[in-house]
Amino acid sequence: MSLTETIELYLTEKRRILDAFPVAVLERAAEMLFATYDRGGAVYAMANGGNAGTLDHFYCDFKHHPFVTEDKTRPLPADVRRLSFVNLCGSAAELTGLVNDIGFEDMFAAALAPVVTANDLVMAYSGSGNSANVTKALEVAAAAGAGTFAMTKGDGGRCKDLAEVCLVVPGTSRFPGQVGKNDNNFHFEDLMLSINHILVGLLKERVAARHLRN
Image 1 (tube, rainbow, N blue to C red):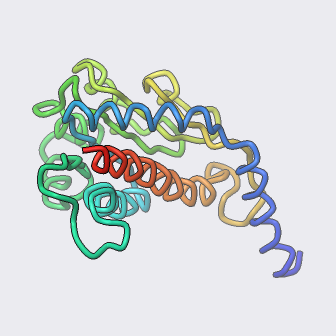
Image 2 (image 1 turned 30 degrees about the vertical axis):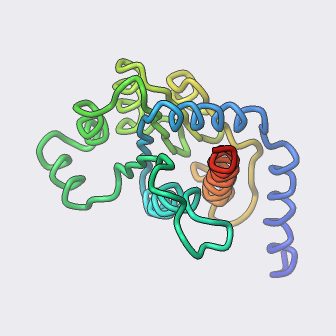
Image 3 (image 1 turned 60 degrees about the horizontal axis):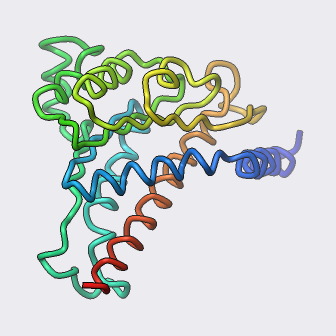
């Protein structure tokens, strides 16, 4: 396969995924986000590997983007409620400390357990849907009555059963680097950022509409 054909393969797979994208599931996730914001809850997010790095982007977008004017010249007034967004992967010191003290599988659960409430939303990103540190944290979140959203691929793994709303990226891949156990992994990671942007944009629209009414 030529370089051109291989590049076109990636883009063709992407189009197929987008055509089959479960829009209704993401709509449910947006409604959970709105409800969390309306009741003053916090959003907690977790992922592993490169996806943990993507959560830094989430943190920046969710914390700031919905709460500035459209031209970005100034923030909305201070009386407009902000969203509390917590990146559970944000501190290398905390993560390595938790792993060292209680183990990898319990690190997110231990970070969540003392603070998560029924007002909150916990967002989990796991390609396999079976990452033990993610599934244990979802169990903690559910026990606290928090809303839970997961994004996975393949068959959805345990996250599909544990999360209140689970978005499973459809399709499969033949592109180099995302076959076998990594099937569809690049597309999953691409869509993770797209989902962030969709949710942030929807929240910005909702916040702006309420601000204008008031």
